[in-house]
Length: 211
Length: 232
Image 1 (cartoon, rainbow over the protein chains, first blue to last red):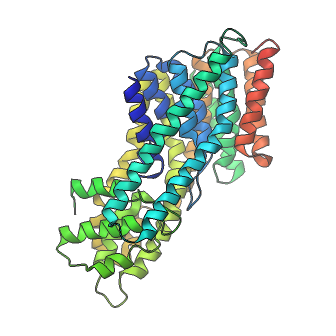
Image 2: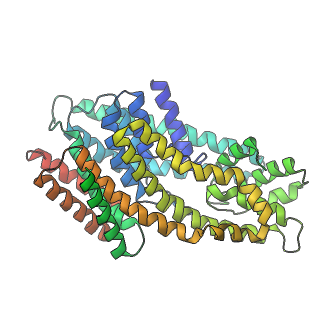
Image 3: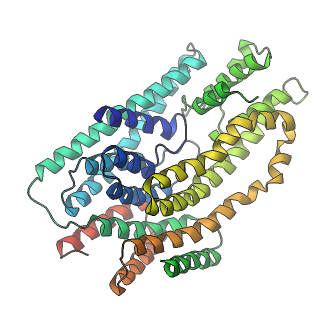
């Protein structure tokens, strides 16, 4: 299973910015797949929803490097899937640390782009080989950066083992954090405000009536 | 040119993405691949020139290749139309697929996921990738058929309105999804409704003034404090 998770880390990295673009790098997909691999799908599904909403509030335009939501989803999902989240406090602590590290992980994407530029400017490498090397570099980045952060996260949680244990209702925290982030997502949708909020409230009301 | 091999190759074309020529390497690489299949002789000089700056949305690459081959050898030449369509598709693709359609797909997938997680996963991947694969598979033929008039084909489907359309239905489904999420988890007491409304309002208010990354950090710290004070 560990090998599958490492290979998946590589695929996520490739899907993010090198090839495919088939959503394998989206937080909801990552959390669900990792959840199925680690037999913990329901808990991870809610983590996936929260991080997916966070990730959706960003668009890759031109040379801009988007927030590394895939990194966040992979690290949290693998650690949660392996059963290291013994309390809500540990989940929140790791989430906090990984949000900060996410910006560092984003820099490794820049390094791969710089390496691609270096190879291109050499001017002697055939285009087919440049494409192949670019995909390999993205894959390599994934299998190094993501699992390294998983090990770091496990180390941090081991350090707090037996202490700092508060709360066991994971779902309520992920659900209300998702609602908070949904406010951002609603603002992110760009059409005329008044209609947007009416449409949103209509959906909210219909959902409430049905449930 | 409906070819599985070229379809797969077009999934990889921007692997050399960099800030010097963006996707230029991939564009030139695909030109070489298509020219072999087309029997068009493109010399090394042309392929070298085509590694210059190029950037578009990845789903639309094959449309541009179709236009390029159609316009190859004409008075205007293919590069003018390559520039026109690459920038237009970059704008349309980013606003429709990355901004609006992905949100729509997510809400539908998450709703299905409450019923069955595997079904949610399948719906997310299928909904998003059906237009993606259609564009990559048929894009070349459509681009080649219409050439520089490719916009006529897109105008048939009112492509400039897709973003607004999916933004609208995404707003509806986002509201619907939030209600269902609260309902299926039985967070239905007055206190839950109140807290949910406060969270949503805070998200909406913070979004005007604060970067979402910083807001997320603040929210996690805030929830940590609530947890230490007795929890939700």
